Every structure is written in C-alpha cells, then in structure tokens.
Length: 359
Image 1 (cartoon, rainbow, N blue to C red):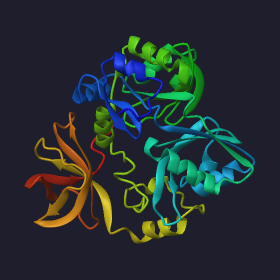
Image 2: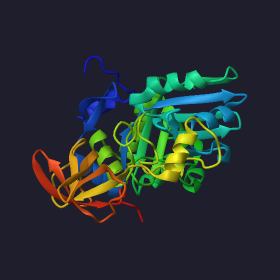
Image 3: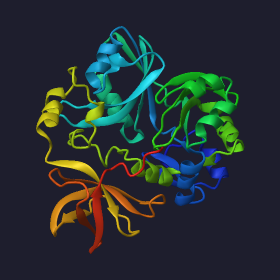
Image 4: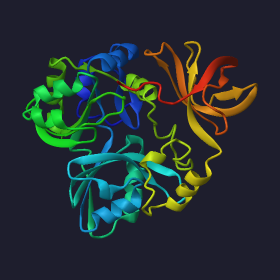
C-alpha cells in the first residue's frame, strides 16, 4: 500500500489497530474489532467512519445555479440555504458519471460531495461544462470528513457542540456551522447507513482532535466492511456496483432524484427510460442461508438465468446473506430464486432492496 494516499485520520486508525486496506487509492480501515460488532454499534448506538477520502468541491459565482441544474439530476432550484439533497451527475448518454450530494450555502455558493473512486473523473467532467463565471474549488486535501451514525449519534454530536439547539432541530439534509469537540465543523444531517447522524467536515489538521472527542463520548470507530453491510441493509447504491456510466439510473430505482421538469445532460434519454421502463431493474435478494452472494454471480428463476448480483453482504440484522441484483423487470417481488455461489445453487427470494428501514 506504499503508493496509497492517507487521510488526516491515518494515525488514529493505526493507534486503534485498524486493519488497513487500499480503497479508491487510499489506505483505509476495513475494520477494527469485527464487521458484525461495528454494524451492531451503528444500529444500536453510535459508530463513526472516516470518509475523508470522499471528495469535497465548492462552487461559486454568477450562473452557479444554472450550471448545477445542467450537470445534476435533482432540482437544485428547490434547495434553500443550509439544505442539501442526494443527486447524480448524468452523462449525455443517459448513464451516471457519479452519485453525489449537493448542499446550498447561499444563492451563489454550493458544496458537493463526490465518491473517492471518481474524484479525478468527476472534476474533469465538471470542468468540461464549467462556465467562466463559475469557480470550482477542490477542498478535499485541506479538510477531513467524519460520518457519525446511529440512533444515539445525533444526541452525542449535539452534546459535544457549541450549538446543540441548532443541531437538534436540523432535519435530514439540513446543515449548520458549529464547533464539535472544540473543532470548527460544517455539520450535515446525512449518512450512508439508514440511521440518523451527521457528516462532519473539519480542517484536516484538527481531524484527530475531533475523532478523539467522539471516541471519548462513546462513539465506536467503524471500518469500510461494516459501512458496506449497513448501506446494503438500508438499500443504498454504491457507484461501480449499482450505478455506472452505461446503466440508466431508472434501472437502479433512482427516479426519485431525477427532476421531471428541468432539462439536464441526458435528460431526454433518462426520461424515456422512465416512461418506457428498462429491461432490468435493481432488486434485493434475501438468501435462505448465511452464504454471501458476490458481484457477478448469476441469479436464476425456475432454472433460467434472469440477472446478476451487484453487491452482497452478510446481514447481522437478518442473520442471512443479502444482495442487490439487476434482474429482468417482469419478475415480481416474493419470487423464489437461486444464486450460483461457486457452483452451488443457493436458495433465496427476490425482495425490495430496502432490507432495513428505521422506525
């Protein structure tokens, strides 16, 4: 991993005996104690993830709204200051360059968070459409980002902050500037686990202080392994698995983040897919046993191949293997299926991809 970049929290991961792996060009902790223990910490209390590898961009200047409306799928004009939303960067062919989050700071300042693996690709794509009046600043290197997630996460972050009332009153995708553990943060009520919580962006040189304050408050450090488990349980896509440059976001079940009223890159093709349907669509598969389907494994119904797995994990919540799969669109939910796991046809059921929804 000598060529891999490190995040500002790398010393904290080493100190906590994190098992390090290379992910999206970074050396990242895949786990500390165990994937199952960390997933349970997030579902039952509070866990946190170093997500500093995800790229952070700021856009400002005259025409910034019009630019973002053209290059993203969701309705940016509907955002009010200190609000964000989930969205996508579409391409002209009706596929997806990346899935992103856009935050509105003010009428002429917006922030965007994009996937680490797509950092260079996204920046090049955005630059190719950037008008001269709009400035794009990449703040990834000078900041760090920590996602604190779980039923107790919101209360812990608020207690550590200098503005508990503001944080407690934020709804999902609301944002506020505050100090947390004595560290200045941009706090967004968002996450990638299906739980409540905050994503905190802070100066890179103060990330360790923030991390230590959260540990001291009882937040469990968690790695990439449990993050993957939690996002599959919650029905959340991962770029490169459930989304790519060729696949329509309609097939991935993401029509809800695509404007029906504005024109954007590839909007005609995406709207045609919405109107006419797609040959395959993303569904969940709940296995009868504990074996884990992995990407590319074949899904069959009545002995006939109907699709392929895109992601699979062991779910501590359901105590079985679960997966996402792109399957033929005419197959109804609750259909019995098999997944070819290394030559063994393991039984499962095609279900909604939201395996877990918090109360």
